[in-house]
Length: 358
Ligand SMILES: Cc1ncc(COP(=O)(O)O)c(C=O)c1O
Image (cartoon, rainbow, N blue to C red; front, side, top):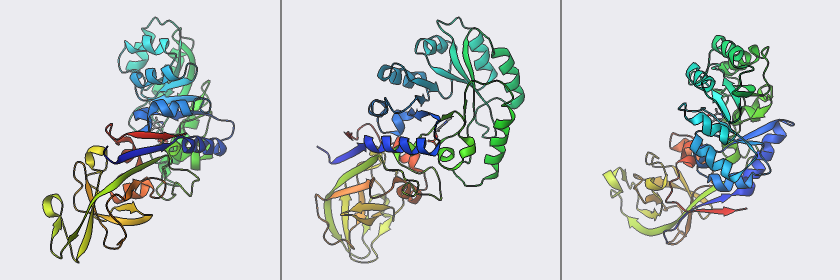
């Protein structure tokens, strides 16, 4: 078997959910499990959080159906709402909570005869300018939807653009815009993603929506997951397949982009970009062998990557290699590769076997 494995620690995910609860006592929690639970496996994560989360948040009806099959009673929030009018009937059947982010979705909902009314979350565009109603539209639709036969409950939701950057002025403004519509009658309110759960108590409202923090990566640039008390859930481990000596002036990998400036010992690792390791990770990106960081060298290939073992003479073929995980935070690798932990975790591909620890 190819030596590459993503080991998922489900107790770490439960621990991280407990951290969210401690930050915001008494609030309810939608665990964000879209994109296959950020790459961790939606079946296993929903099962692990079955009795811990009050609800789950997903990006599509297909994802919602998968979660509903695993949990008969939890609230399931469709973060972008329905994409087509025909989806509302199924959403009602699955007893989903649906977001309405524009007039078209609201009109489509009002045109339905549903088997049961839906819990509706009006989405305010408070400054992210991606999805959502303006304040005027929101006030208008609040009036038209209140009491409609399709609506069981009318709720308010918005999303931060910069909550991960401490003290960002847009966050203040977004929070202000959210508070400004609370004169309207809403059953439930939700604003906080992971960064806001961890650092902005005024944004906690009724329902938290933590995603990345559940998986043990940091949503904040200046605060590490460890500093936030989070435990990494995924360890991506491979093995050293080969070790060779490379003379000064010789190159490693496609394009011969890395050239040895000293006589070097090069190790070849069983993980590549078709597994989800970022191809654009530059030479120098840390990789962990025997508890020590060694630098990636040369271009990442489809199934392999190379590291410089010159400062780790004991390393040999067969040694375990950690690409990220318990001892090498995914955020550190992401930073070196010019991306974020979210992308690395959610892009671990299907060919990487997942092993679960409960
Ligand atoms: C609307 C919404 N809420 C909550 C989240 C969770 O965010 P995070 O993973 O930063 O906690 C997301 C993630 O993209 C989202 O789109």
